[in-house]
Image (cartoon, rainbow, N blue to C red; front, side, top):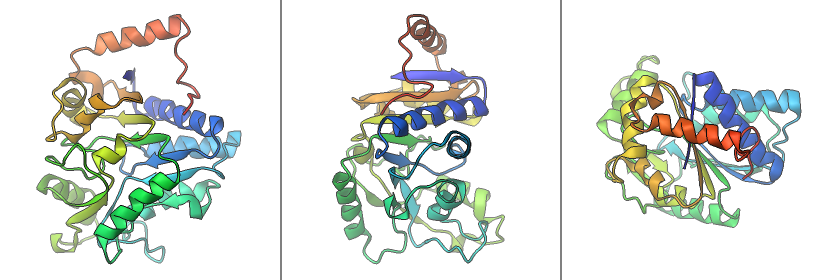
Length: 280
């Protein structure tokens, strides 16, 4: 596991984008697993800049998103504030700004009539694409990936998930209160890739920022592997892992100095091949 610590959010966003761009350049038809939320926005903005200024080509890239609220679908007739679907988020924050082909974009269908059937089909689509080359991840406040809430099996596949009170509270404060909506209008379920699905990617890129994530970062990376912190499954991953943290997010790590030392040694001896422009 490669743990990279940078000073601030802008630096971790640029570093993460360089890894994704390297994957695209080395394999133009790569399969990317993508995440939503506030953390990856800076990374997506840097990828957009690379597309516009450096010709980063998304035309062959295929994507699978981690999750979507159940009962919610994209509605471009609504404002960005009104439409809280993750499909809308991805359209606004990345897809409409680059030359990705619409048929290559896969996002869980929050309006599907049979979620169990859809989840099985989503898994089949990932397999059909040859699996995910690089999975981008954030980290939830309670240590979850996607909507794999505490207690989710670490072997889980794509499934429909009931949201915890903490997630509902976070979502209400972040989105629905601003819309003037009450809690009865919020989605209480989501479709999410499972932990087992995520762990089948060939490589993982996890980015985390901010002091409020410092405790859960330490639990995830240095604590025991447990279904109560589903992202701790990163310790079981057998592929290439890069975790990119800002100083605040890394402040709870016991071995932060060691991680910095390892990175310095890699640079000194020419072993740092992942950034800028790492491969899939």
